[in-house]
Image 1 (cartoon, rainbow, N blue to C red):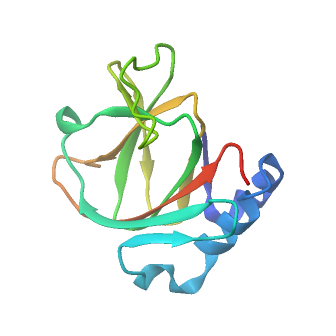
Image 2 (image 1 turned 30 degrees about the vertical axis):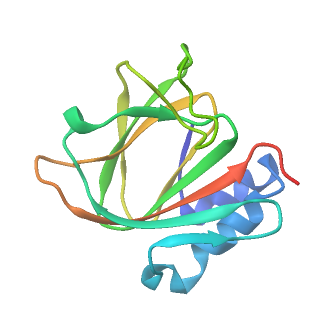
Amino acid sequence: MIVETLDALDRYLGLHPCFPAAVDFLRHSSVKGLMPGSYALDSTGTKALVSYYFTKAQEQGKLEYHSNNIDIQYVVSGCERIGYCPLTQPDPLFDTTRDVGFIHGTCEFVSLVPGRCIILFPHDAHMPGINHDTDCTPVQKIVIKVPVTYR
């Protein structure tokens, strides 16, 4: 897991050949007005998922992980907490079609506010969309799905 500002993501561009396209997309001035949906970033399968939602109580959250994708999560507006813990016990019911598994466990939380990103690798379980304080708040978020192996 890497927590960083959008401005400082350049130092991680060499971690994966698809990271430059992902960072360019996030830095584009029009991301604030994007409609919810999926946006292809290049021919490798890298895509941006734009969503709008309200945060939820921690008790409603689920720890999830992905095997085939690296997540770069960026809050465009609003704020949320995201839980994190290392994946130690994979889900025996992992959904390969959706590339998601769920686990139980305890996690530490970091705050995501506009201008801040989190990069989550396949060994990073995470619980997104959690209230920053006691009240739910509206969030616009972009999750870039970067394939671990690409075409």
